[in-house]
Length: 482
Image (cartoon, rainbow, N blue to C red; front, side, top):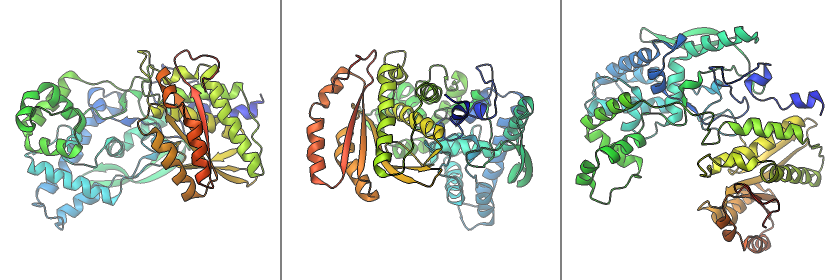
């Protein structure tokens, strides 16, 4: 395989900038074309302040207590000068430079502009009403208000600590002789109740032209340590009698967030007890070696497979395009069934990983093959969420509809018989591929009539669905069952 073709596969920061990255590196090595669903957890910073990040927790809390004092003086009047001033301070742009968050398939998340600043301001007022007069962990606002999840908390943290993240990134670039460019941020650093401009030297993401920010691995988790769901779990296991007195004996671990927030607002002492519990017990960053969610290892494994089994994906007509899609899907099946790709869909405790892990694995095969063939795969690709755009350097552009689900997914048949046809009709995509991952013997029982049902479905519409069954059992047989 030609070296130029191998270079076309490079999508990690370390690969692009020729860095010999290994486990001894303390920084997270992001994929520059796909957001990794990890988040900066401010509690990890609180527990593990190191180097440039010493003093970070105090900086975050100082910011929020400053803004909190403004909100507290408004009596809840959203037209008050101090409320408007606080809302302006609470604008936190999405920090896409980190390549982290919920925008799987791309590095473009939902953003956190003026609309979200109003939500945070309201959250701070809710905190006032809930009897809070200061914060020890700003994430507590997520227990008091809906709409403040892991991505928002991560973006808030990254905005306040941007100047530290920039310096951290700059130091790494100096160590490895990575070229940087000056970028000016209007909200580069916060001091004296003002956001101030600052210029930072940062490396450039060659795939989108944005700067890149690096972050210590130990600050990242899949969910914040302090959250509404975690608060409810604490109450369920430690204050169950109190819950039963209020909700009855049929109370369960899983309730909607509105119920959790309402309960948290009414029990200030319990919230405080929960925070002290988290501080005493501590939490851990994401375990990269175990990778239980399948968020990390998919990249390297699919990259290695695509290097070992190169494909030529030249196409000029729709027929040629569909044949190349067939090739990539066939190679995905080969990877999973015959090259131990299935092992990436199982944890060491013999519990299968989530559908998201399988979708990332499939996405990895597509991304690497497309990069190796100079094909631009749409920035918003999210396997299982609609059509995927493919465009060659020669201007040929085609669309494919690719859906991947686990056979054990409770919404499996709905995805096949309702969701996929609707996508095809809405986007006018003639052929849709429905990739089904089988992880247990019992999954095959669910699929006995699949070909017949697909055939009947295809007769009803002008669109065509092609089912692809992938055997991802632990130690699967060499030949597929279906």
